[in-house]
Image (tube, rainbow, N blue to C red; front, side):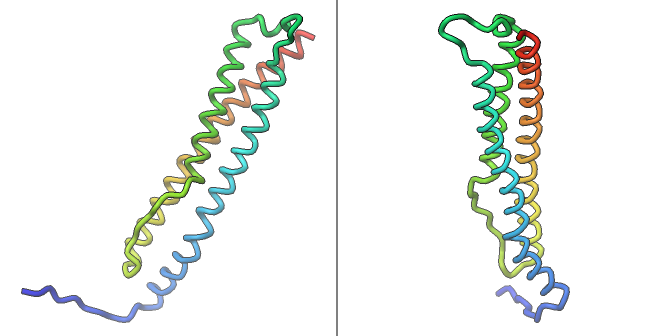
Length: 147
């Protein structure tokens, strides 16, 4: 027996939801991606600063670099920033999201998944970034105290 599909005109609430979905499809993920791009830029800039602090002179090694804890914090900061960078790249990397254009409920579900996916990776990137900044702070304080 053939399946009967009923067709009706969308009501105003469904129309508003569909139009909102179309607007949000471009705006909200874009905001998350802009935040991720900002973190990516900060990471690359601060990695340069960290490498400047950790630069080893050809003649003598700065006193603070002989401390194992400073080496550990330096390596930790680099590792955390690289992890933050990778998480930020996950946010901005294009990914295919599929939804049924005729079903606003599935569109809303896919949109929530998309936002959750990007927000989760951005949050992780921000946490790793913050931990790396703390590690850089320890290295900078040690460098300043050794001068």
